[in-house]
Length: 167
Image (cartoon, rainbow, N blue to C red; front, side, top):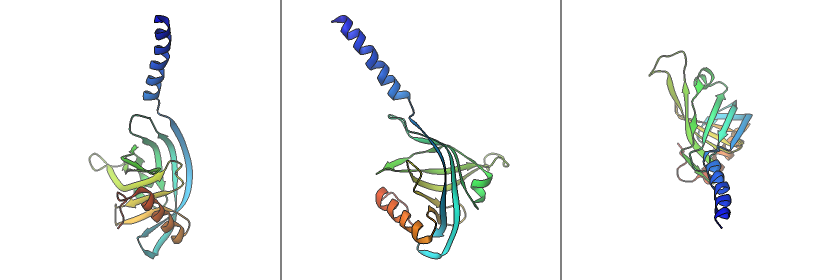
């Protein structure tokens, strides 16, 4: 009986330790067609691309975090800055939410940090919505047309719920 406990508790303890510390990484290397626009104003739509390279860490018992770069073509802050780690502040129905923050290496602290806005994305980065509050309130959303981008925005808003910010 004593040997049974000894040989069964050790593997269980090792499994628990493994599950606690392992981060379940998901490598992400994607370029998505997107558009920038003011909400419900199709005349402001401009095509762009979102390039994402990095790893989404999804530990079981700790906060998820994306480490890598998120570059939005035509966006000076993201093109000239280094993406800081994006901690997942909230997750609902497969949609992650975090703050999108950049470090401008050409500036000295504390002026070197710029918050672009809030980012919502699914685990595969197929659907992405960024609320850009840097210069003016606008959305950067995956979709090659205004109609596609608005559809993605509405779907993510519905899936994420009341915490999804719409201006």
